[in-house]
Image 1: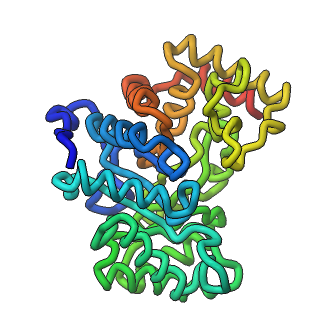
Image 2: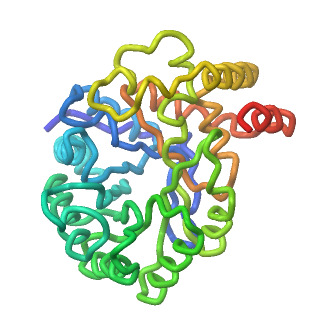
Length: 331
């Protein structure tokens, strides 16, 4: 047990938005544990980052069964920190996890079957030492399992008390999203939130999905808002040690950083500096400028990064000229 005591002023600066048509509000900045919290990362740095996030009013922590690496280690480390430092604050936290990819051998450790979703969450709860999570997601559409089976599994999970709310992730089809939402609504367990990829350079959800989420009353929590770190100044010089590209166990490849891409990043960085922000802060602000976005999912490898992310809340507005310049650069 540590001597951690949360900042008593943690709710004075953070901003919160209602998640769809629910009773839940989420902080504009949520912390994702997909990198930097696994078994290959310094545990005390992970602990300090979680402390800093909560001290700044970040109440939402996003995980999945396959976060690490290795798989499961982010949940295990989070559970250890929760037990030692944050247990007394459990009712102030929104903890989410997902049924991710390729979790165990055989045909039952992936995709969207009822067996997989229920078993996945049982394992996640055991790793984190929890009786329930606040939000449980189906992580990606399953082309073979009937959507009714997957959504009924989510409903069962809520009815069994293992999750308070459910969501979907990586459902980019507006039609499939509407179908999933309708099935869940008919079952009596409305879809709380959708987690798609969205950033300055990847805007596909603007082609109907955002509008669908609004009409269905579903919240939106974009991931990859910094485009895996590309929408920051870290790759404008040499590839820094400890970055996602430099780590051998991360999926990001250095050959993505073409001269053309880095030129665009440099131009975006100029706009950010003129706004008094870093490029990463501007990229966050750009995502959050849209009120239909509930919260932005941010990663952090050290406490200072989550602190920098929260600072963006003081300047979320863009002029029409700034937006036009950004559009011209990336399109």
